[in-house]
Image (cartoon, rainbow, N blue to C red; front, top):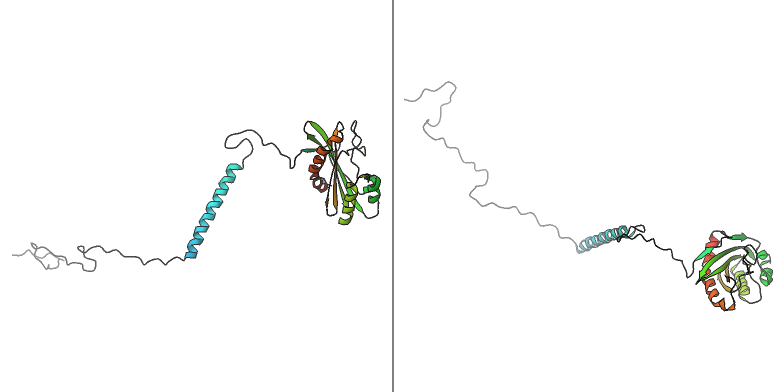
Length: 246
C-alpha cells in the first residue's frame, strides 16, 4: 500500500525508493573534451621608419638624461666636489698679464675735447673740426715678473674709419706726438716717472683707435722696450672694457 498523498504535494513521477535523475546540460562544453585556447589576431606590422624613429627618440632621451646627471655632478661650488676639496678656483686673466685699475684712477676719464688730451702733430690733427668725437683714458698696473708696470689705455672715437686710419698712422710714427697718458697729464703723479712712452701698441677697429703706452716704476730703460711692447699688446684688449663703461 502506498503512502497517502499529503496536502499540497504533487504526485511524483518516481517512487520514494527510486533515484531521481537530472537531465544533462548540453549547452556548455563537455568536460571530457580538451581545452581550446582562443588565438588573438596577429598585430599589424610596424613600419621601419617608425621603428628607427622610436630608437632615435630613445637615444636622445638617454643623452639628455646623461647630460643632466653630468651637469648636476660637476656644477657645484668650490669645496663641494666629489673629492671634498676646499681649495677655491683661482681667477685667471683673459690674456698674459693681470691688469688692475690704478688706485688713483679707479674709473676711466672721458672728454669730447680730444685735442686737449694730445700733443704735437696728433694734437693738431684732433683739433680739426668734426674729426674726433671723444677720448677715453684709463691707467692700470700690472706685475711683470718681479717688477711693477704702469699701463695707459686710451680709446679715441673718430668721425670715420678713414680718420681713424689717419690717426693711427700718425701715432705709430716717431716724433709726431700722441694722445696723453694720465701720468703725462699729471692726473697721476709717480716719483721719477713723467710719462709712459717706453712701451707702445695700437689697434684700429672701424672708427675707433686704441692706444696703449707703458713703463716700469721705478722708470725702466731702453732695454725694457721689448718686454713693455708685449705688455702693451696684451693690454689692447682693455680698450673695449673701458669703452663700454664710458
